[in-house]
Length: 333
Image 1 (cartoon, rainbow, N blue to C red):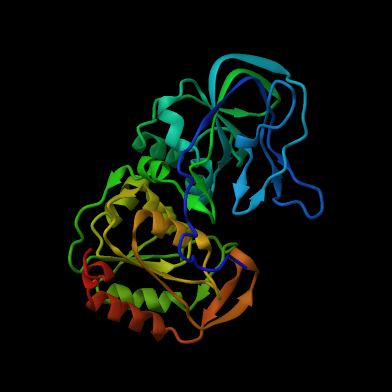
Image 2: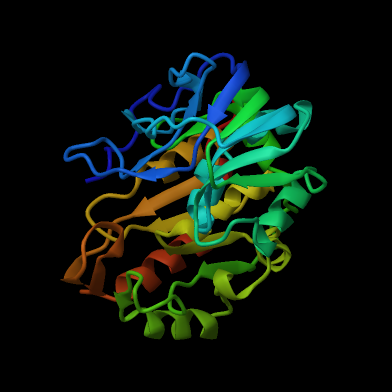
């Protein structure tokens, strides 16, 4: 079960972030974890010149740290400066939160960006390149490591985002590349999951809810069908952004000065702590709503449910849309 919502100070980021410069590093491909009881399902990292793992390159999720991959002697050597990025994911949410976790330092560090692949492809896809373009990093060379390589000079930034733990202000600032506009009254966007693959988690009964919302003037947005540019354009002036818990909400990381009211309906008894962490770092006006759901099949993030009382979603959104934002309702300092 996900961690409980944040008590005060839960999401505190380290005061400073550092870049570690490693001479004669060895980087090997990501390896799948096979040891019973291992902290994570993959093994990733970098080795120093003496063959010991570089702590700053370890992949972290909450309090868990991935084991380093098996060490292997380099099959080739690359001279020059390089930057360690970590895992290359092709999943939208994992890419924003984990692949880009060290992006706060990329602009100041020379050389190609190195990845350990956790994706079907060995290069950045179009939407990933679009995000790098928006971050001002579009001209950088990227290399995916598919064999052990000796690196002459490797920069290893510490992560500026650790899931379930913190989002550092420097990391938040580099990701928030797209300026949001002042909310337009009545502009409300529902982030739909109804078009996702049948392998993904579903909420039975959501089609009728989306039809009713559309009748009431909501924009029903299916992010997976749109480019990054079109997604940002659809959200940048929204007054309310709502939907069931999902990675589409992580797209808010790309927004600067997000003033929309955010309403997330959880897909289970508790919501993933990353939503609270991001809201805390970005100072979002966010509410998380828990509904009565009947479990149909699947487990964890792949679990599907049926809404016990579908009108509860509509009634909740009508109340929120009709009232002032929590920022407006709260007295200033």
